[in-house]
Image (cartoon, rainbow, N blue to C red; front, side):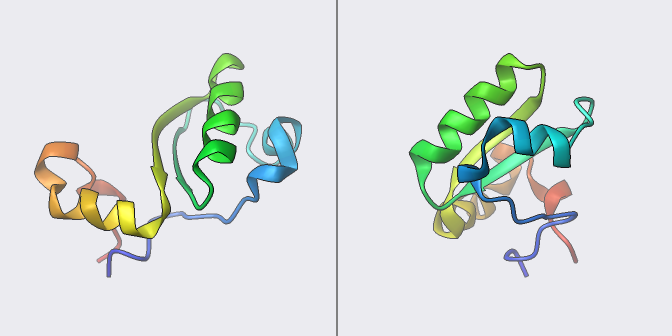
Length: 83
């Protein structure tokens, strides 16, 4: 089921960059954001990128994720799915 992503954690973008850094200190990981409010997710991703985090994708909502799943070979996202 594409709605279940490996190691997914719900983090409210409104908590901000500092709170994200406390909860997710490892900058070596590759992060994928699925945002319900694109601008909040974009601002958080931008701020974290400036601090050295690797933000691979910013996807707005599950409908957008479904579009990526239909194009799984192009976007190389099969590794993020749970069988």
